[in-house]
Amino acid sequence: MTIVLTPYWSAAEGSQKLKLEAQPKPPPAHGLLPPAFSPEIHLQRALLQLRSKTSGIEKYIFLSQMKDADLDTFYKLCLANTSEITPLIYTPTVGDACVQYSKNFRKPEGLFITIKDKGKIGSVLRNWPKLDEARISVVTDGSRILGLGDLGVNGMPIAIGKLSLYVAGAGVRPASTLPITLDLGTNNQTFLEDPLYLGLRQKRVSEAEYDEFMEEFMTEMGRVFPKVLVQFEDFSTDHAFSYLSRFRQRFPLFNDDIQGTGAVVLAGLLSAARLSPLPPRDHRILFYGAGSAGVGVATQLLSFFTLNGLSVEEARSRIWLVDSKGLIYRGREGVAEYKQSFARQDYTGPPMTDLLDIIRYVKPTALLGLSTIKGAFTEAVIRRMASQTPRPIIFPLSNPVQLSECTFAEALRASGGSVLFASGSPFAMENFGGRRWEAGQGNNMYIFP
Image 1 (cartoon, helix red, strand yellow):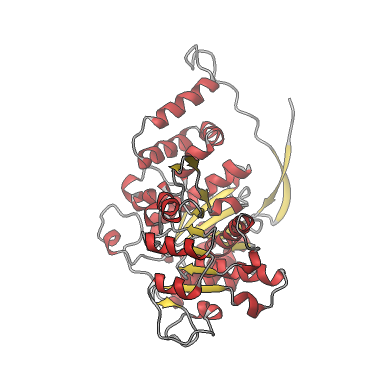
Image 2: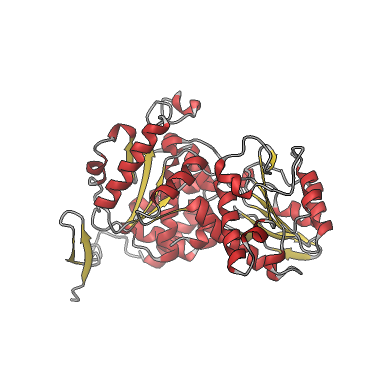
């Protein structure tokens, strides 16, 4: 017998110790399994059972139950069928799973910390059963889940799904993952009136209470889990920027919506630029959507441009942002502070709100959608992009798929097949011009630790 000693951090003693690694479970005693049972055939059986479900949410529920009952088979199934199962445990299906979380709830998974725990958050964290094994935590407050808005405690499937991808894609041990939902109320009236809703039945707390709670939460996370990397997920835009700025120098953390989206979209733009007639630094990039994701990507692009020899002013001159009130420029009233650094100084008004007019004015070579406005990239918009550059870069990145700015088929047909395309959620392959086309996907999962 091989004895394996594994180092671990003891939160209780504040030191590194060694533990005896658990031995593999012995096979069931004779007679406790059917005579022809084999793990290989069982994996095939599980896949057939999954495929017998007719809707995405039914498949999600099936996989969740399998994960609870047979963790090994769940992850073997994920690894052997990644392209089929990833959209079921993550986007786009996880959006429906969040909306229906309280209705479909069967068994708790993860840690729930509420505003009523203020003053004792550390003791709640210490209730986690795998205290010494946790290494990565996805934390959400449910205030801006995908493009679905404030879902409150129903946002927990986002944290669970992302950590499942860490395990399946990067080999992180399941015991090392810690999904956390922070319940500070919800402003979703439908949920507040739903007798099945699992969260606090109160509106979101004041900014002062929010800040005090988050300060205590992060301080206690650092004490109880000093080795854990924290990933902030789907916080509202104002909180996403403020808490990243407030805590990033004090704790090991990153914000997926700002930094994760920025990294993966930059990678996509660099790949697309290789197929376009222009080098990356010469592209003119228009963002349709200026929330945490849009500004996060713009910030990442700014860093890339300056690292490649452009001045900050030259780099900013290649970036245009559009929010719900139109093109962002220096003289426009009501521009949030986190958008100010990308406000154009070469345009003084009047306000420009029509996307087609903005495209005619800017003449972008790349159009990035982070607006969660379904159909915003109309046929006229795509045709205009294709008329201005031989290989237009069009990335409708909004999630879930029903909020995408355009479909892959629409982009292909309106551009005559010249588009360089990537979306936030997966699209099926398309037949066009006698060829079979596969959509690129610009999803944050590609940069997960």
